[in-house]
Amino acid sequence: MAFRTFRGRFLAGLALTGFMLAAAGCQSGDNGILNLGFGKKDPTAPPPPQDPKILASQLQAYCPRVTVRDGTAFFNTYSKDVQKPRPKLKKTGDAAQDAAAQAEADAAAAPPDESANIVYQASVSDVTRDCSRANGQLTMKIAVAGKIVPGPKFSPGNITMPIRIAVMHGAEVLYSQIHQYQVQVTDPSVATQFVFTDSNVVVPEPTAQDYQVFAGYDENAPKATTDKLKKTRRKKAVATN
Image (cartoon, rainbow, N blue to C red; front, side):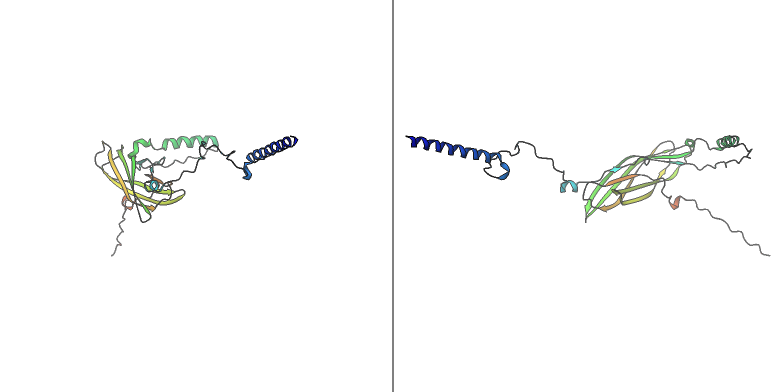
């Protein structure tokens, strides 16, 4: 009878020891012992965000937008009136008095309001583009629409507008071309619409959507040679006896 009691206690103690070892193994999920899946991440939790990737189809459909920079949407032309030379006054020795007298004289010799000398004002009202790809290159057709409003000094004829088209990739200039675009304006009482198109914009095919295209007037561009007046001088004949 005592033997059965001892045997039962021994089996019960052995079972309790096994249970404690199993529980300890379950709590140490990092060492792989009796890993029953406890301590894993919640399967219902959303996955971490990934970096967005541009699909090949999206890149093939990418056609850079055209932007008009500030200050390049308008182009004003003024008549070249002869300005009065700056008058030179005799100095009296009093610096303040001399400065006041010179300022008054400069104001009297200043030209009138520039708005009265406007020949015409050209403006860009809309821009658009079209893209095609071939042989690793991107070909763009860029169109610029606008109007010309004659000013007080306007006279009918052909006018020339400097329109620049540029394509940038960061700080790198991929394409930049100035166009001396001519438009004939015959009626000084109404605005004249125009559409300029540059079909020869060819740049390397982009590998990302990071091209910038600009269109607008460039007043700092050199004028075309056709716009310059050619002055000829007659040589005096040598008198002979």
